[in-house]
Image (cartoon, rainbow, N blue to C red):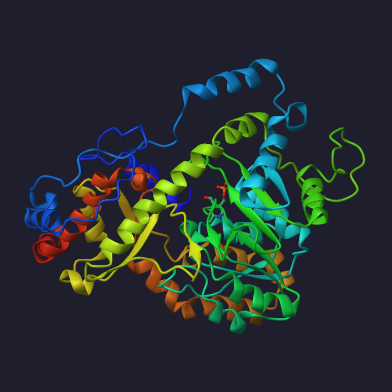
Length: 459
Ligand SMILES: Cc1ncc(COP(=O)(O)O)c(C=O)c1O
């Protein structure tokens, strides 16, 4: 289970932290400026961790959301017995609607975001023994999709200011085995795609956008998922448009998406579901009618909620930046995030040395659902196991594997990002302006009392 999902579930059931059963309706964002008087009054009150009353007791919206008006369609699918991809209209209808929404010529629905990435890398000819440059600050599925092809996930560094791949760190990672670059629009924050494409294109490298958290994010007037060769999305349960599991690949090349279609359908030609005629390798990565029916009914909701999240994120970007030691993420020029989580950088030195994890505890006690973010996952064992495996030893020299392992220590920007970033949970940006104001008040309160909180947590 990935960090954001696990933490989302954990924080959506925060016990003893003033977080109660969630608000189920989307409250309007009211354009009200933060009141310094209210914030400073709340800031002076005793923090909840030291026995005070939590700033926010209203809870946060539960996720996923079920709408009674979807029932009729879902029941129709159940009763029809037409559950398999080619048996009904919903998967293809969703593909057409999602392509239109994203501004891509084509879309192929898949069983998950992970399988979307696996299929995309295959059709872009990532093969055993190749290397793919990827962002380390991501859900581990981005690594795993590359590993599924027996290729090496080579990490570009993370820019702590943007939380995304630092394009300046890519050049030193390129080798004669590099085949593709996989930027990750983490938390729905667009990567600097012009800079990444400028490195990839002249070298003939392919670009697969991991847009699994970036539905409707925009970069220079275009949606994430349309900026590389192929874009991949996830519709897993915690996502902004969820179907339990689910994914999609978007792209402008008919040929590439047709090849994705074949690979995701056991290697058959497009439209062939009968078993014979497998002209290429493949697997079963198909989406079901249930998923398609659930997703197509959520498109309008996604559009409305994205606008709501952005309104609240703009407010937090402005208000949290006024608190010393809190730095909202920087986006590339002319781009718009969608804030799957709302992340910010935390500087303990401006909070009397209160650790990031201590800050998170204090925040949770105030009723604000937040958590630490991805860890330095390359040190967690999966890549040591990879390097030690028979297959990788056959495919890469001992010298290359050693240099690869050593390079993890050079990821200073990523280390800083993992250590100092706080993520507000998925549904915190769906609150009304009062609830969003509570987030600012809670952070201000923690700062005002940070010396006492740090002392209590050390004791
Ligand atoms: C950045 C990122 N990449 C890939 C994935 C994989 O998607 P899925 O869980 O649908 O397989 C996720 C899902 O959480 C993700 O957040």
